[in-house]
Length: 83
Image (cartoon, rainbow, N blue to C red):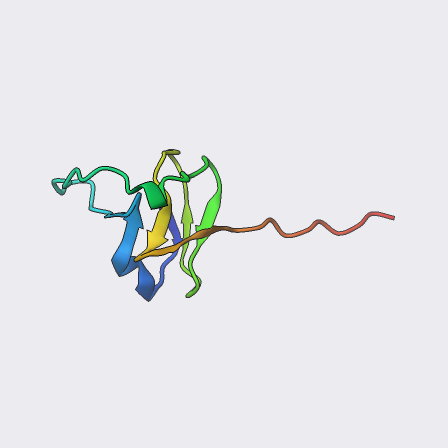
């Protein structure tokens, strides 16, 4: 994923209930927590309450969250009406 807008909350970013790690770090494979198994959608932006925003570049089964609070899909801005 790509961080579009950073926020303080990203220090506790999780996927599937497990903490996210840097690409060069050794992951601790703990599996997906069933409560965080909704998944992510390719190309969608997910936002946190503090304004942090992530763009999904590879979909998966794990739900993105800050701690135990799931991120929500950012809604597209409505286009102006062309009368």
